[in-house]
Length: 317
Image 1 (cartoon, rainbow, N blue to C red):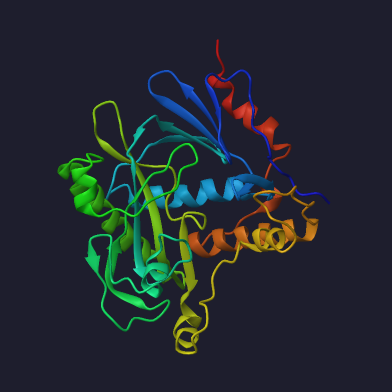
Image 2: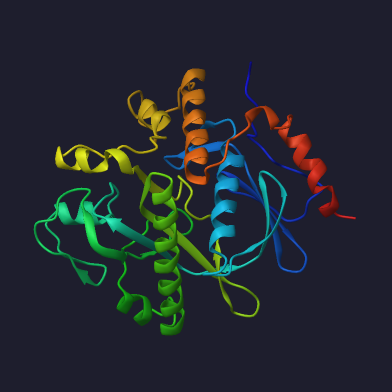
């Protein structure tokens, strides 16, 4: 049986459509925005395939965390008209992506592990001690902000001083977002530990509303915005110098890179079993992170019809 997939959420009756890589956005009056999470899987600056339940799962994991952190930091959520949809406040996104890291980990050019292994000890306005090993817990969580790249640019590492001097944020804004980020991360680590998980690192996006209040935007502590490790096996694998056990969702990415240059070549047809395996990982992540059972049988299909029905009150009159 083919699993239900939402690979497109174009709804002509909704106004001001903006199609992102994985989300469809519609700007409504009164500074509100409908954000529909599709099942599209993006990598290498292109869409590779669609993963059943992905959009709903990420929306519901973010909902779990938004609900459990609203006492720390206000967020953009107004309501959830559909399992795949957030009605949120339309924000001016701040031009700094706030990444919090609790471990010496990562693979990107801006990750502290990559920089550390290249010989750097001073980065992001801080100095890391000598003798740290890959995937080791840091003395305390650190913030490693990057410029938020728009229009296909690349994120660049920033220090607090650079953020202020370049006028990206005011000192007061930086103080607010860094305080929010560290408190959100502490709550995330605490709650994840109760589920047998380590919240390793994560990114936060903040924006300002029409009154210039700073709100948490986008998503929070999902497996797409955060790195999680399995707590039970971490110590032993770290001692052995092995990569910690995680939600490995990169089956598709790895399969593609083994068969073509994804930046230049046509993407081969992704096998159905690979798509299903990736979907299973998202379901496992949802259940472990939230402690709730994901009932795939209760997902009402066809998905776009369900979403259209639930969003009908927002159609242009």
